Image (cartoon, rainbow, N blue to C red; front, top):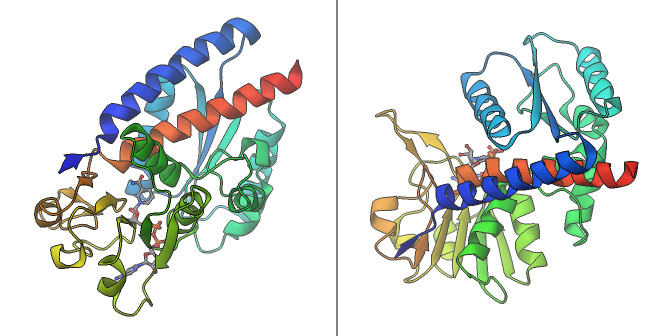
Length: 285
Ligand code: NAD
């Protein structure tokens, strides 16, 4: 079994992004800018935003966080997004999800200019992904594809089972795999007999948010296991959705949690923001 080291690969990607930032700055005089909208006091969301901000600092991006109270109105968030859409110093806009229940999240995501949609959540970019066109791809599944590429793991013709069907993880993961010519099955909470599906998989991609969802007897020998889940165990430790100790003895490759997909997500946010900045700079030329 070999570990897929997302920490090492993300450090390598950060270095490349930082080098590209210097080149962009010498050509245009400006650096990529990322605006983050953080609503409410959820500690997990605040922690993610803080990690993203630190990563921006490390590679030399300009970044700004708009912190808003839990009871903020739809109108106030929309005004901020419109301001960021019009701001030439901002190349990427990230709305930290989930938003409070009084907010229409779809409307908010649709307001972001697709050329600044570095999370790839705008229906325009979702459509481009499903049709196999270039655009912005959600950072977590994009990071998974980078990790597979780094270890020369080809998905073409492989039976890939994606467990979890959210718009930010499972569905774009499945689209990317399909675009790369894998045979893809998507399982979710209503899937009958999950084991029947996973046992047939050459590769399992799980992002369900359920500790130990994928157990040893659900995995065939030599399978590739990508654990996207991030959960807090009773002992306070971060764990994924896979019973790592037992499954790792059976599989060919596996991502650790932490240190697997998590750091890749942040690295892809940086690379998407750089891509947006480079496109905006080209437009201005
Ligand atoms: P979500 O709640 O929006 O979606 C969960 C999906 O899993 C749903 O499609 C649901 O049907 C499915 N599911 C839930 N229980 C299941 C079960 N028992 N069997 C089969 N399917 C089941 O969650 P999300 O936002 O997609 O996140 C999923 C997990 O991925 C969470 O642990 C989250 O913390 C993690 N995550 C990690 C990263 C990262 O950077 N590594 C990024 C985003 C999310």
